[in-house]
Length: 273
Image (cartoon, rainbow, N blue to C red):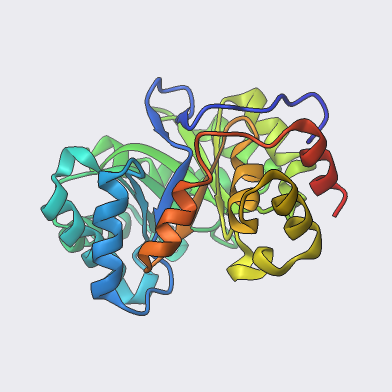
């Protein structure tokens, strides 16, 4: 584990410094193949405690947001913490930010989302300008909270000091037991700054299930490699994971990553992979 960071044993984590709690594992909607199957699994996931669903306007041209909207209509708006993301080219003007935000809400069938993120930093535009323009989604009531995605530590640091009315509560980045770059400086900084890290691709598109080191630890602790990989990620303070699944058996496996924690020796072993 990054030096000085304790093992986080909570399966429900604070979002930024808002006092609001979100599940340590949320469900994603990138690259859905079977929308009908995904809808059923998402509904079941929400009903069984994975009530955060992550999506984005760019996922399948908005179809993923429409999927989340169907799930929300089935389970009830107050039972889902919706995260969506806006493409950076929308940040060229306040009018375009508002137009894109309203389009996302229309596809989702809701009047607001819980967390709106800038999908990745806009090239050629100062971070401060991007964030201040994006802040409009908070000021208009389109989002309860705002955050960023794929921002480095330096970009996140600048974003945190740029807002005027809202706080940056999250940074969604690639992070897994096999890709631990975020541990070098981003996660320690996020812990210090009170920012939630949302880890995407925590299973490396299935590669963790076949990695000899992960398999070895999984056999020793009596869990599956997928469960070990997810548990490793959510053992970090301030870190949650976003996982996509369209299968009930995979949902069961994901749920099995909660309610326990790897021991420190296993975490150290995984860090040496």
